[in-house]
Length: 470
Image 1 (tube, helix red, strand yellow):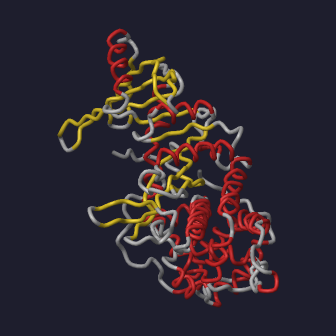
Image 2 (spheres, one colour):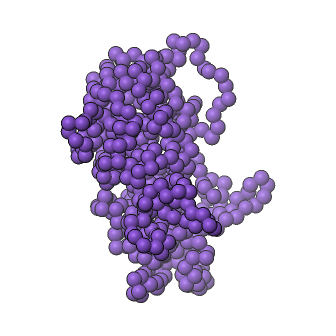
Image 3 (cartoon, rainbow, N blue to C red):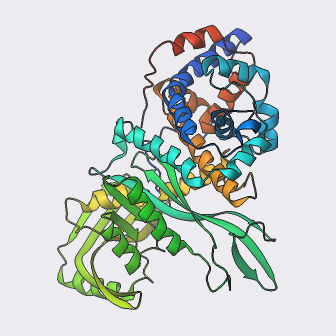
């Protein structure tokens, strides 16, 4: 069950009404204002992105290069910024003269128009870690500039981790694809583990992906990659990318295992992990016994229309096996019972989490309500990227490396849109049209002859200082 943030800036439903414009002049003025509100974000972010793209080694033969690498990568980025559903659609729409003549006026570095097949061939040749570095450096830059400071809880950035299937075929489309038997048939899929910055404000920023992939020979089912193995790799990459950052990891009920929690401790990652009642029976047995002895370790709290009862048990010794070696881990468990009235019926739901830090009356509400429950935000992020214009489940290429690079560019386009839509100047438009409606409104404004280029250039002469509501 997802708990929606009451301070969310997005409307629950959009108005069902006709166009508010009395004439074309009003519409043109509104579209000009929206583009001028979007432009400071582009001016603040795109030059840095173009500079990072330029640092990627170009794998092409120098004599055969027609389009600069930064041009090709920018084309890939704007496929997702404008929410096109395929390379074919992007070819048709992104090459319209009106858009690129206006765009080149502001960013003269983009001096040619490549075909999307050219873009895909380039992404087949670039190492994925080089593209991921651009995304990670962009997020790190936002952190250093203080743009994401309001997302922190107790001086920690909260990172949610969850897995989802990207695509599946009934034929072997890539050697790295996971394989699954369905009776006499088989399916071949790409499965991704995502890391996403989440916050009590309901903001979610995807920034790191670890794919499950088979790289070994032999029996594919005996040696197949899995989500837990991918999680360990992702945690190591997370700490490597941000070696000094205070990070609190939140995960679902698949991950409360000894090896995962021990790795978090080794990497100095704080964690809150969902603890299902059927998981870790020895821990639950000790929890039930200690709760009878420590009945004072409880606290009540009112959250919206819900009455919450929190309980906690600290310093539980958990024994587990790892690599044929016995190990012991000291963990802490928190639980919560929510009670509320819905349509005249009394409702109740129970929650439990494993915590890396001891629970107290002072921190239990914050760690459970403001941290652990926002694991759901990564679910919202995945659903948004699947169904709100980012085409998460579309490969854009059946070459494994190109597919992964397209995936990273999708996250980068999503991040640029998120920064755009959370500016003060566009927040009213988001309330009127919603997220997808606002992006569609902006796309139509840029690709049709609505905009005054002179006014846009005048904005470019000023230092970009977009005010954001994050």
